[in-house]
Image 1 (cartoon, rainbow over the protein chains, first blue to last red):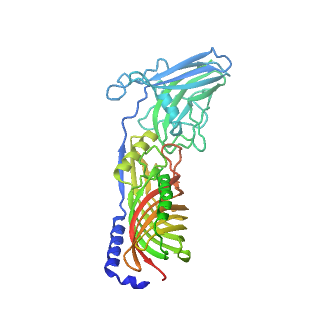
Image 2: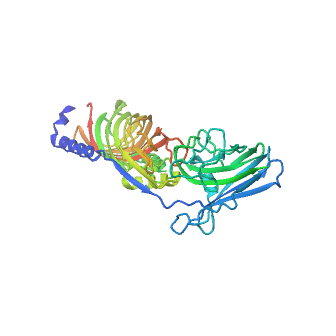
Image 3: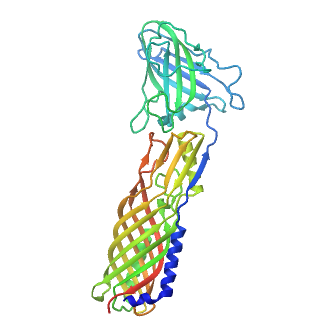
Length: 224
Length: 241
């Protein structure tokens, strides 16, 4: 049987072929940077607030920062003329958050996109002033609160408002999103509500810190 | 689909070869080498499909053998094969990167890929050989184990945050493997023959582990089917009298 192995030219041919195929399979690394097309902008955040006990008791509050043709905020600053909430004390409100991109024609519903991408986005709500631990860290250095919230926030009685995020995402361990919420008011008080949308790609864990801020808005709140 | 075509071809070939003159079959062992054409989702390059493997046409090297009972047409065959179906190339990473960038809504994604699709299979099964002294047709179906020696490892970094990186690990899964195919044996001498083979091979999906995937977003591969169509040429050394 092994006499056939005496066919050394054939054996050499196959040994050579095997060696060549082995060499052809050598390892190499590849690296690619893949940029995206420009992301949509967010210009407008609207809170639609409905009294849970009275569906006709509905109000909206809108914070808007329009952008110029280069995507930079217009020099006149944000329009906070409609960023006001007047709530009743000791009342529960159902709240929805709407987001728009008014740089596009027609206006683009960013809120729907955030809903689709809820697994990497999260809204955070910070009533101010507060005696509780801050959910959203106060600005430091040259940073400021979004208008109409003054920086720093004047000391005073806390705003008696508790915000609970209702909707959750589809992560393996579902995390809050914040497109739908409840506001529960306490005794009469005045203050501000800061609303921040965080973009947390692959780092969303329920906390504020990871990721970056997509939108930062402020509202004046009166509970009376 | 190709697998079904192959089985059909084998089925048609059986009665045709049965008509041919048959001579006693000798047991043999041999070595084959040739091309391995990745097929199906293993070859697919659709980044939205989590089972797309981006595997390439590579090569396969196999040690074969068969023992025919009493020189009849029925025997027991075995094969140990090494196969390589390439690695992820720049175009593949560009597609995957665009998909991750879109899914995570980030400005840019950096992808690094290392390693290749490499596997070792050990299969046994029935074989049937028909034909005359000079030319024989072999039809066989084998099953056994498929050991992945590695798959491409993919590291994905979102934007420019080095901490925001996740990795699709290289797989070393042990899975069920199978193959079916035809071999044409041409006798070069009393002991030596030339063998041309064509086989469809596959395995149950291999398991892929992912590190630091914190959010359920975008392409997330945990199972990868492996299928290939192999064509080889080799030598067979017959045993016994």
